[in-house]
Image 1 (tube, one colour):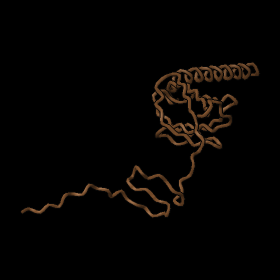
Image 2 (cartoon, rainbow, N blue to C red):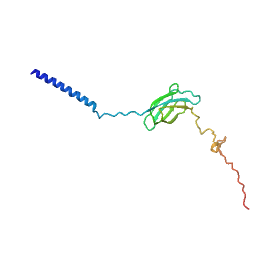
Image 3 (tube, rainbow, N blue to C red):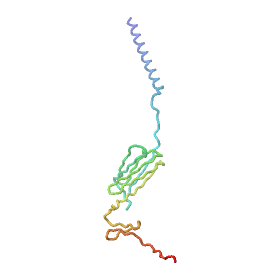
Image 4 (cartoon, rainbow, N blue to C red):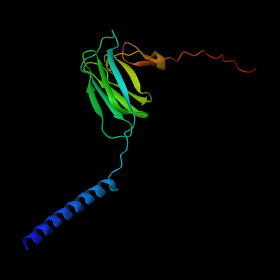
Length: 168
């Protein structure tokens, strides 16, 4: 009797192991519900150099902002001591808005087509210009009027006079 129960126990253990191993093999080969792999699009590398317009020296710690046209969000990078920064995650064939902000310089913005595997962009930043004030005298000769010293505008009304001849 004892021999019979031991043999039944061994048989049940063996049958259970067989069922588990067959179930795991079929689960590995017939999994159709998983996500399909989609390869990421090819990317391009952009090397950006930020220089001063006056002397061509690099601008350190300038903020370089990349924004894909049509997508939400952006990526901001800082330039190193050589005025350079690099990004290599932009999809090839996309349009990107490049903005540069540096303390003491005019803000720069331009749209670029990322159509090559590697691109080099050089930006020369200018110092800010003088502000326009309505309280100062300005040369408006291009507009046809000029201010005299009294502050009143005088217009150029010098026309050749037509001869006034009356028919006889």
